[in-house]
Image 1 (cartoon, rainbow, N blue to C red):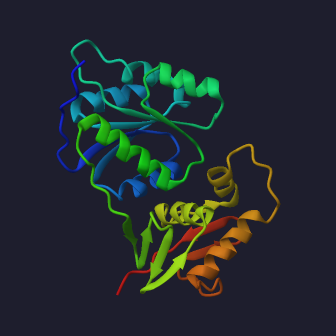
Image 2 (image 1 turned 90 degrees about the horizontal axis):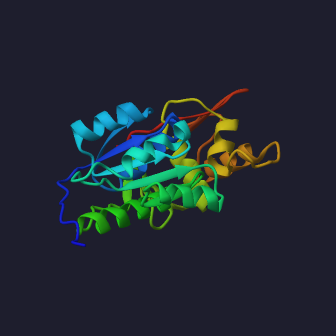
Length: 241
């Protein structure tokens, strides 16, 4: 079997087949650690149309969406057609679900919730393996005045370095990726811990408080994380000088 000699012209094109806007924005922000263009759709028919017309180099798909029917089209194309590598996402972490996804053609699978750095690493490996060239990787990205370093799991604010836990990094990613959007406590719980997690009543507020302390963010005069009483939180970027 001959090696795949296709090449990627930067920016690489990535198709996201997802129906969760909040998760979609996190993935798009994580992909900023490379050089990628993205298109997003929620349906198999639209995804197949984009595949034909836009020719993406990678597909990231929710394998639970519409019973995973899109995998039947993405994993095994028509004879003579180039196969596009696929990263599957699922909220079901059992072995049967993973094996079924691999049987239907995914190249890798991630269980939601996952860390942004894990997604970045998996995408880099798949792109290199498929196209035989190193994908662009930039450890640091900027959101307003925040400089987020995915490798050292740190954030710099005006030159001052903060060290975050993995959970705090994921929480900051979630908030920053959805800048300006109200995110409820239940959405944060679902994204960071999964739908089956039974939490203490104040677990989200506690982690928000810890993140604010590291960001030196006074909730009375919010510069990054605004509390929407009785609803949740909203990230407010501060422009760099």
